[in-house]
Length: 365
Image (cartoon, rainbow, N blue to C red; front, top):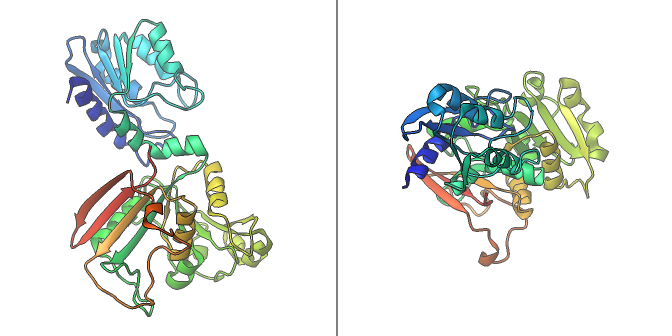
């Protein structure tokens, strides 16, 4: 690892601390070395609307930054948004060199910040640990590029791929440690999404317990509009947001949900079947960056068939349920051949108690 890579790796570690608090902004970290190459300060973007990473790092370094090097995981911004341009702070600091992991494709930046620094005589290098920086902000990049949020599919299953027994019993497939990890994940996303079957079978609350940095909207996708009028979601709709997507023609069926405080969104449909991409388009218009889809198999299948799953969190328990009619995790049409399946861009496996968590990313950042 080169010196540039070492310090950029530290900047990426700092940037990751902002995940869950800065969205829909990107997570950014920065490190400053003095003119002699000695550590002088560091910082990260801590909350949406707050100072950016460069500002914190340069403030920590103070006069030691003059003639030194700034490492930053994303191109410094050059426009007035929630905060002043970071390029102003960089120029005022007197650093002689800026090393950025990647350019920022945001239209009001998009190379402009780097150009300002170069034109001021600062040496600029771009691309150090860029793949890692892109992976960290994959959700930000997807929302910026497609207008849709990053989709995380989550399920817990047995060794033989079953979500529940043949009678529908599913409490609990995974262990307590896995369920705690799911609650942590809920607290980092903008929405937790389920289909009608999950609401009817499980009557879920879909909140993060304990609460995390974000309060996710609870989202139900039900084209038919046939949902129970009384459930945990309607009972708590005024406590944290509930959004129901249904066929426009069936929105009237959900008057009890609307009266309880839920937002009912009618979408065009074909035989009550909603396009998962249309739902994602609407979630993107709300500037949701990450959404967690917790089932069921029909909803996950429709997203898979649409190529809309970006990442999967799969908890595997050391159990065998068997049963030809015991449900599996992903329904839909599915692929016809092995070659049609999407290979993951990366996979991480970890032990969680006596269970295993497999995290696969399918969308290259």
